[in-house]
Length: 287
Image (cartoon, rainbow, N blue to C red; front, top):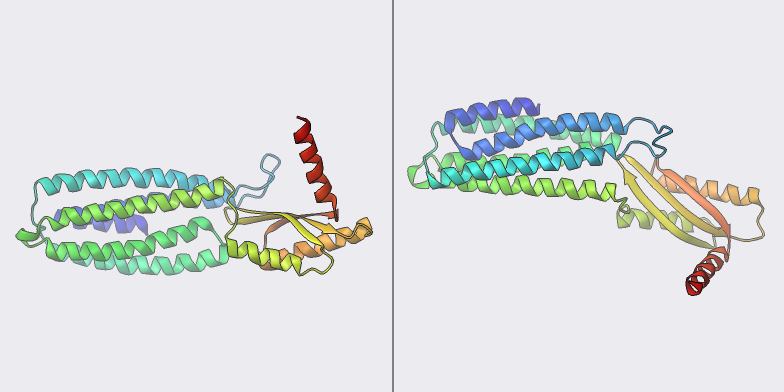
């Protein structure tokens, strides 16, 4: 799909010589490359854990995101150079009708693709597919701006609008690169899950009656996988079997909040966390 959109936009650029349309074509070329990278990344992320990767291969999606961001940034630089040259030597857009038809076809096809990607993203919880859908949807908004440029820049006195809008599209491309880097960076740095999700997990765990205290809740994401670990303080009089049963129940409760999550719950007698903290303080004082 992305390759087809890039092809018709490049045809439109040849007919119109609009750098605004060229910037959109470059963006679509990148989309084609990004989709190929996402295909490889998602396939790798779905590989089950092995002896060398006990936590799975989910971060393949984040690594792919970083690579995409580099490509996106370089394409934005190319668009800026082309737009600067046209701004220095303005020329009216020719055959704007052809360009408008090309962009209209592109927008219809893109909206159909976004609808399909969103449906797949909901089913798979894939970061890569969700990000791809968001990017394609924002492409539709950028394409509307390009259509405006094609209409107005056909007038000789408004020829400067074409490179100006190309600059705007380049800025949008750079923003897309930043969003991809930020999202990928969060996963590579094991950023906590969103605050509202953590609150739901905490509430669900605390609602288990036998728990006296929830300690050291940690969450992270790796591709479509979600990881949750925590320590729970229980009555010191409980047997090992009883403590294990409560920990198992807590894990099940967490998975109701995050279906499919990998959960690790460690039960410990109430007061143990306080004693551990005291020992750490004493050790620090001695040293």
